[in-house]
Amino acid sequence: MSGDISTPRNLPDFSGLDLAFDIVDSHHHLFDLQAVHYPWLTDHQEENFLLGNYDALKRNYSPTDLRRDMAKLRVVKTVHVEAEADRDGQLDETRWLTGVMAEHGLPNAIVAHAWLNRPNSAEVLAAQAAFPAVRGIRSKPRTSPTAASRGDVRGLSASLQDPAWRKGLGRLRQHGLSWDLRVPFWHLAEAAEVCALYPDLAIVTEHTGLAWDRSEEGLGEWRRGMTALAAMEHVHLKISELGLAGAPWDYADNRRLVREAIEIFGFERCMFASNFPVAGLRIGYVEQVSAIAHMIKDCSTAERGALFHDTAARFYRL
Image (cartoon, rainbow, N blue to C red; front, side):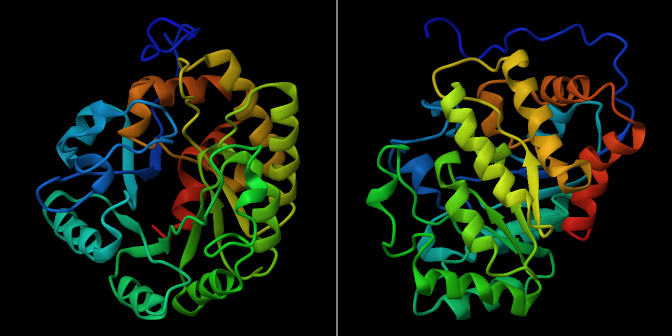
């Protein structure tokens, strides 16, 4: 698709839309390129980045920047999710964020990183859990770059089938931590098999299941994976990152996805997440909140409260 893909498409008229409600942003990032080493921002280009070219992200993104993007929205608490800091210094980002929290009053909780299948995984996990603000872990399993190649990674080290990786995931329960699950839609059904192993582990699926193929075939597979995950009460969902590589953020297309995702999981297990500044490559913060609020404007105040505040506050113990 040619043309400007940084401008949202088909946004409705938001005039008169009620935005006077409390928001918990359950997923955002902050960057300080001097304080923390992010190889993907300073050393090399990520070939399979979810939104394609991301040169605009290669800069510091501070709490002041985030608050500017939030504008006058009533964002009362936020959750910082690990931002692919150098994996040889997995605690560095958490230490830095602890200082940021003390100085700026946000974020209010941290989802940190720890490898799950390495010899020192238990030690690193315990060290992350020792930080009071750490509520969960995001440790991405090995995934394939395309749906067609998914079989190439099945059973490999750090894959969803790796016994050592699965054992490491189970350790999160010892520390009372949740797991942020991030896989492309073609791995959702496999992820559901892993989630079933630990019914006492709080899990949240990120980015609306990363439905990157909006064809009927692609959505059919996304739907099957999402339904398998939603069948387990301990699995939740982040309504977030609806952007696509090579295409603008489209209201009509994304509305269909959001409405169906909420129908599958229910408001009580869905939470809003901005994924800023990454999502800012396609849509502004206020535009994104406005669009999602508009998508559910026929729902009750309680349902809107669950999506934008209550579910995340409960899940991350805010």
